[in-house]
Length: 344
Image 1 (spheres, rainbow, N blue to C red):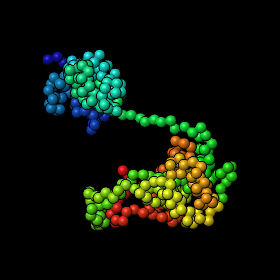
Image 2 (image 1 turned 60 degrees about the vertical axis):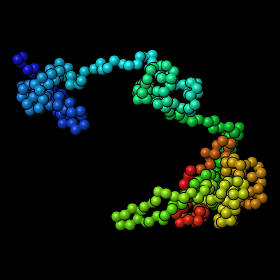
Image 3 (image 1 turned 90 degrees about the vertical axis):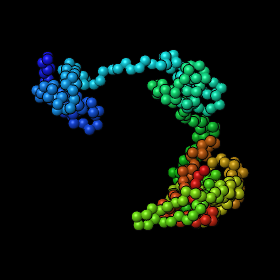
Image 4 (image 1 turned 90 degrees about the horizontal axis):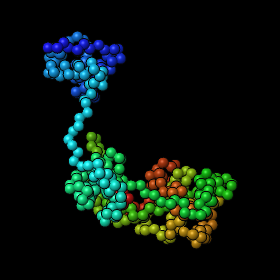
């Protein structure tokens, strides 16, 4: 038998090999190979290493020689050719081109591709006889193509007077109006509506939690119809006053305004600014005139067209009122102790 290859480790190599040999996360094969090198550096023969690590003599001889020739990189597996590819480079390129086209161009009634749909279209278009969805996914993954994902977009600035209108709203959030600071008796309310809220009532009461017992909520429920939630968000103290209505409209919005303005401190305030979007319930100069006639101390301020994201009440909810020290009015849910309104 030929003499075993002598292994001599530098301090840096020994440190790396020891760390790999003791690793709990490295692949088992690498851990065994690292231990072979350590034992070989300790002067053990291949037979002794094989006996101690419960491997064959040829295995100890192989990785001992690999390390002597290539160092730590020699402990890695060599590249393997694998099975010959079933699909040519042209077919793979055709799959990628198909994924980067809209389904409508192929006459497929879909809004966007999925891997199973692409696999079916590959066979239908004659690109390949058959191709599985997982193969399509692997082909697309190499170029990070994900046709089933999309990002919506829109032209956010459509109002020709966007800058002036947005500046008025943003100034109000900073308690300024027409260059002047708002007084202590002036308020800014942001208002919005949320439609199609499902009112769901549990069929059986929900028992409260107890010792070593969680609260149990029944899965089944009864539908109570769809409601609209109208909210008035006092911007600076963070108070929410809300109401539920069967639907939205001018009457429902005016009812919300009456509900808020009949309370203190708004009823006796010098001015109350209402920031609203351009919805049909409060659109245009007619809505401004109606509010001013009904409540002379109210000033309606519209956000720019297609810029309702400037309206802070879009992110408010009834739970906000619990964090405020000011009294608020709870929304009127359906008459059931187990009513659970949730967004549709």
